[in-house]
Length: 140
Image (cartoon, rainbow, N blue to C red; front, side):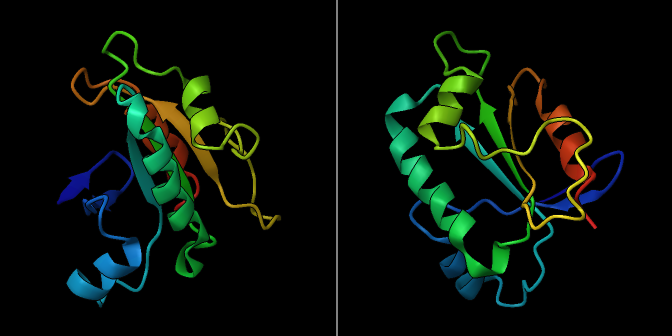
């Protein structure tokens, strides 16, 4: 699926949780040699699956082909009562002290991978725009 934003064109792939990124690329897109960014969507209401989501995120973060790629983590479904807060999601994903900041953060002179959490509601069309705007500053 392709999504055209104000600043760039996104080519989006939905990777099922039972397939790793490496398996997905090998089976379905062997020609996918360049990844400019990763957008990782988490159901912030389904707290029982946070451990599974952390495991999948950790696998992506440790993938050798993605070491310099910026990561946007979107906590979805904030429109549902009792969905996790941003702080709770950060804690359960092990990101409490590992994100780089939401503003215009210049990381070009460092070896730090841009990574940030934004809360959103896809259904209510809110929050994810800020995340994509943040991400756009790191896409070459």
